[in-house]
Length: 193
Image 1 (tube, rainbow, N blue to C red):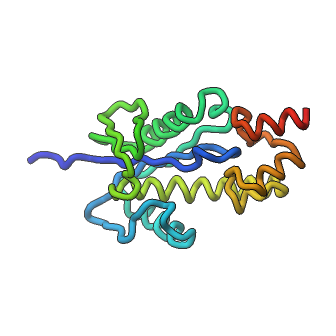
Image 2 (cartoon, rainbow, N blue to C red; image 1 turned 180 degrees about the vertical axis):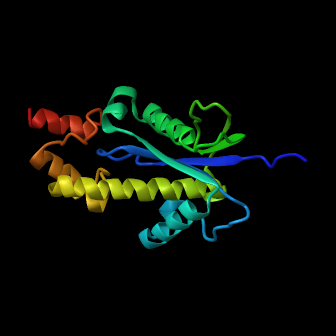
Image 3 (tube, helix red, strand yellow; image 1 turned 90 degrees about the vertical axis):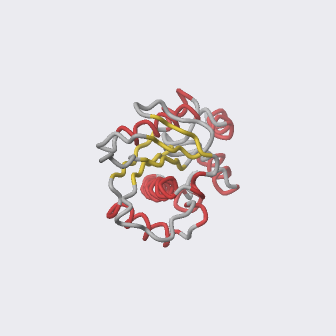
């Protein structure tokens, strides 16, 4: 009797923001405990994402969330930091999958077979689940950063370069959680030097 192949889905949240970590999640779904309504996290309301995230944590065979900090993003660049967060998420699973399916064009260095799937967050349920966990965890992190740095609006724009955020950067200057290698943050550092 052969063992069923263990397939994990991996996705990230937070590549484009000017502040906060990039967060990755890895999920191995349990076919015996299906979750209805999995989709790309960007297509779901915050309430639906929260509900699905709780179901994923409860019903998945294994899951893990990991991140790369703003300083790691600045040190390595956003792509390498994203792959680092993804590798950390895979390593944090507590089991070794036979294959990892990764949303996008690039795969992290992991100790099992890995395959990139373009638009996988919309077509592969385990990647959709990872997308949801990464997004909900990152949003919670940005809510916590809003408490520490209330003038920036992190609870609304999640660190993305909205007009509100860019104006706050100009007015208040960057914080320790801003990504110094991103042009608008660099400009704000020069303004406040």
